[in-house]
Length: 297
Image 1 (cartoon, rainbow, N blue to C red):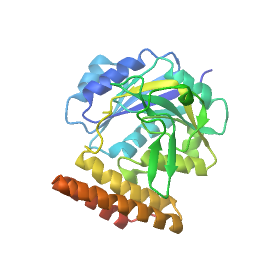
Image 2: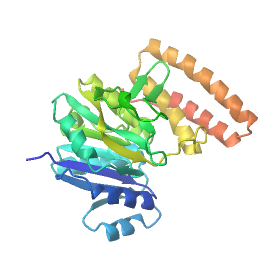
Image 3: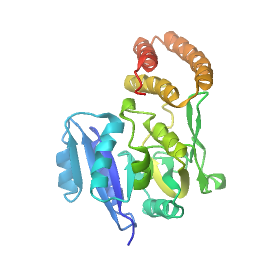
């Protein structure tokens, strides 16, 4: 019998994207899967519309926005209680290829030491341009880099390979890995929790694989650059510091701080010239809270 996969989609006031994602999932060729939509305290009528269009899909409603990490954990706990062999975290603003899950499963089941598998992800508006083709973590620089980002797809991005990092945009996880290392760390709330989970999986001896034949398209702006929301600016700065404090040695933390604060000085200078006072405050608040956050020992 084919392994059972629970596809977990987190929705937060993203009705249109979620409905389009669910519509694309109707066409996939892997037979043994169940979709779980976790609504993260949406204020719009998301749940009503999802139920109307997809009456058989399981929906879990959180009373408030628990963030990506804990919101996803709600779905993961439910999936494991209902005997899922694998959990697939999938962003609601994605469109999937019909073979995306079957290709991930081929990789996942080829080796018992493979704990996580990630898809090749393209920009939705630039369907042959890569957003993610594997990832690299550099603790000294606080970098979680996407391989191939912004480049046209080519043969060099078509090889099955191990990866430091699998983005939470499309992350297939074996139940054994979840039982061994736990769930997403809710300390992060949003952003960097996927990198944290990946480094914990690698430290536990699991392989992380990039599956080039598993393809999805992500609705992110190719040219968004520094136009981050204030919330994103806050959490990305806070969580980079938090991640490094949790996983790096004292020597590497010192190297990280030298690189990080040099970059932040340049960033704040640019924001000052542009008179983006709110953005400066978001960056500084993120830095302060990252440095002062109490980490459980």
